[in-house]
Length: 351
Ligand SMILES: [Zn+2]
Ligand SMILES: [Zn+2]
Ligand SMILES: [Zn+2]
Image (tube, rainbow, N blue to C red):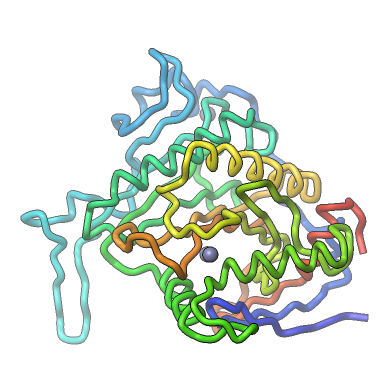
C-alpha cells in the first residue's frame, strides 16, 4: 500500500511530504549520470596542461608544475568584486525597489587533476585536499565584513547544472543574505533558546539530532528499517535526515559540536575525508554514477563560534524534478523515505 506522511524539520520548521511511489523503489530510480569520461581530456580547461586557459590562479596546492587542487576566479561570474564603488557595495533605491551592482566573489575550485574521478573513486588524500581547500578559501574571506554570506557548493552532472564535467566546486560570497542559511541559523537559535523534547534548554538542535540518530541505530540496528545512519567515525557522522526533502539526501557533520568549518583541525579533516569517501561509495553503489549537488553550510564568517549552529554538508542526488507544488508551496514531496534509502545503502536490499 502506498504510504504518505508529513514530517517537520526540527531546525527550520519546514515540512516535507514523504509519499512513496512504489514504481520508483530505490533500486529502480532513474539515474541520469550515464556519461563515460576519459581520465584526461586535452580540450578541458581544467585538465593539467591547460592552466593558461583559465583566469589566473588564486591558490593552488602544487609542487612545481604538478598540482593536485587549484582555485581560480569563475570566468563567467555571477558576482564580482569589481562591482564596488569606493570600496563599498552601492545600494540603489528606486521607490520600493532596491538594487545594487553584483558585488561579491565567485570562485571555482578544481578538486583534482583527474578529469573523471568522482569523490567515490578518488584517493583518500585527494578527497582530503578538496576539503582542506574549502577551509583555506573560506578562511580568506573571514575578515571581509561585506562578504560574510558565503557558500561552497558542487554541481555534478547535466541535470544538476554543471557546465563542465571536470570535478569542481564553487564558492560564492556576497553582502546579501542567503535565505536557506538564514532559515537554518534562525531556526537553530530558536531551538537553542527553547526547551527541547527533554525539557532542556541551550541544546544545539543538530547535536540533539545526531544523538537521536545514534540512539535509533543502537536500539534497532544499522540494517533495521528505522535506522537512518550510514557512516560514523570518531569525528564525523553521516545520516539521511528524518525530514529529507529529496530521495537519498545525505548529511555529513562533525559528531562534536562545531559551528565554524574554518576551525577544522588536520586530524578532523582526515576523518571527514574518510567519511565523505565512504558516503559517496555507498551512494554510488545504490545509484551508480549519480548526479548530485553538494552544499557546505557553515556559520556566517564573522559570526564567531556559535553554540547553536552546527556546520554540515548536504548531498542531494538529482533523481526527481521540482514541480509546481514544490515551487508554489516550498514543501517538497519525497518519494523514498530516508529509512528505506538508508537500508538500501547499508544492505543493498530493496523494500
Ligand atoms: Zn578535465
Ligand atoms: Zn551541535
Ligand atoms: Zn543545511
